[in-house]
Image (cartoon, rainbow, N blue to C red):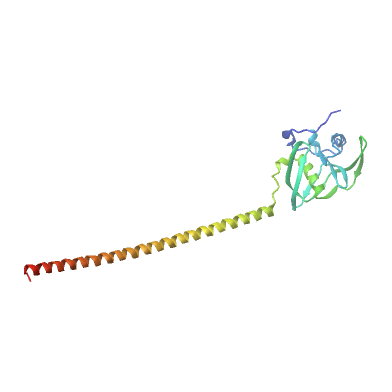
Length: 234
């Protein structure tokens, strides 16, 4: 009998799993996964123990189930989910998950622990509608079947908080722009005032210079006339 254990090889875990032929081999695969399923875990996928087939075991609010060849349909409503993984020890990620999930499987078996053994109950209803934590658990284990890890998900981003932050940043940027334009206008106005003052001063200097030249000419004429009178020219 193969001794299965949870693997932590990231490259191996990124393989996509193959569908199971429900007429033949799933009971053995199911037993292998359940034998490695920790009592405190919420879920385990067959690829996590090196069996790359589409089988997961999930511990939900209404019982523990084995799902064979599950397919999920997620809602558009999103919310944050803080998750860890048995195959990624000491790693936690806050990622985005769908709040509601519908999962349909070829085989659904409800299991319960009875000492070292598991009791099996075949469930006729093959579709489950799950919400919140139950939905997150199934989405997490389904990711393993697709070769997706929690580290492949981008961190959760609060869109409302981000939009609010962007608006605040834009508001600050606009305020700075208005202030800069105001300062530019003031500088331009001051420059105009300085230019006007300089023009007025230059005009006054020209007037003073003209007046001084006229007065100087008159003084020269008076001096010439006085000299002529003294010499008897007039």
